[in-house]
Image (cartoon, rainbow over the protein chains, first blue to last red):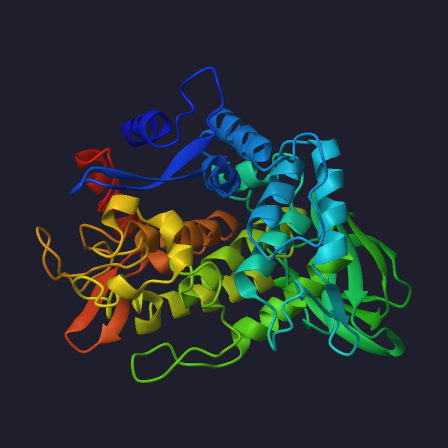
Amino acid sequence: MPWWQYAREHYLSIHNDELPKTTTMYYDPIVNVHHVVPATMGQVVAWYAGPQVPEDARRLFAAGVASAGLDAASPSVPLNASRMYGAALALSREWEMPDLEERLAEAIEASYEPTWEAASGEFTWGLGLDEPHPRGQYNAFLAAAEANGPQMWERLSAAPLEPCPQVVGVDFPAVAMTRAEWINDSLFLSMSPLKPDPSKRTTFRIVGAEPRLWDYIGIEGAMLESTASALVVTVPLVEGDMEFCPSSY
Amino acid sequence: MVLSERSLGWLRYLDRKAHTPDDWSRDSHPHEHWDNRSDAPMCSWHRFDLVDSSYALGLMAHRTPAWTERYVAILDQLIERHTGWWSAADWLTQFGHDSSRADYPDIYRFLIPPQLWGEYDVPGWTANGTEPWGLQMDPVQADGMLFYKGFFLVLLGIRSMIDSNDRWNEPFEMIKDGDNTFTWTHSEIADHLRQQWLAAPIGCH
């Protein structure tokens, strides 16, 4: 990637043995000016570079963490509202840096007002901004950190999600699946209703699977109907696990 | 893998936000819950909320790979908005040099070389129409506007990575403002940016 080779040397200065203390945010070719900023901002750049050039991104992240003083000490709280801490937390989980992750998570928890809306089941971060709507860009990075895990961000970019039979027609947001994955031809689901009510039932379908009989274990009272296009599942509106195993034809 | 309770709660929030109808055409305005306030003057545009919100969706899809319909539905809402006029409101309103650059707030000093203070557009000012490039109304085709097409490709790319339905590789219209209506596909945008970068490793400007 010629553009990256150019950027790492001329803009990010991560080609030397020593970690950079500053990086170029913008380069203006008309007046030949580099807009230089502290390497701290490299933590956000590392988020975007990570999936494509992980080793360079880790060097850039290390420079950013050192520049911000996060390599050895916890940040002062309350944190200013920023995308940087969410990005750093996400990358600490991506690259399995538990000490840094713990320091960041504690500071974020103490500073960014994690907030549940009981009626809607919605979760956001207020970030201490006292605004009518959660600040979208900063929330987005914090949500990415919440969802991320080891090498997950890199995997997302490396290859398309492997196609598999899908659960569809879930009555979201009243119902959601917190686990939905195939392991050795069996489907494992964990259902999480917003307001569980065993007197009510909800229906979803499993499409793309081979038409056949299925053995089922899990939430009691489930009804399975196999059609030409789907396995239709009707189940009491309760929280619980379900497992669908291939049976005879 | 599982989706955490917090991830599920944020998914509920983003789902409602993305499915609340609003209008990103020039004569209307995005709903105020879309963030055009963060990190001025470079990121304080609604489109950054669209793009940034996609990261968690892609990651969540890897946690529940057999249930992705909701992530894809939200991503389509985000992408659809990114084809509207307001997605490029900076490029389509910031023509020439910034007439207020002599009056910038002091906080911009860390963004502008001292010797150019007062005579220089702050990073983030798109300056559409300045020479040698001239006026270019299509933010994708333009010589500059890297931070528009690059981030849009991230959004489109995440969607393409979690759903095999290649909806956004069918031609779609962008900006949609009379003569300023431009037709692209995901792959065409990616190829265009690739060609721009091959031609200029120093980057688009």
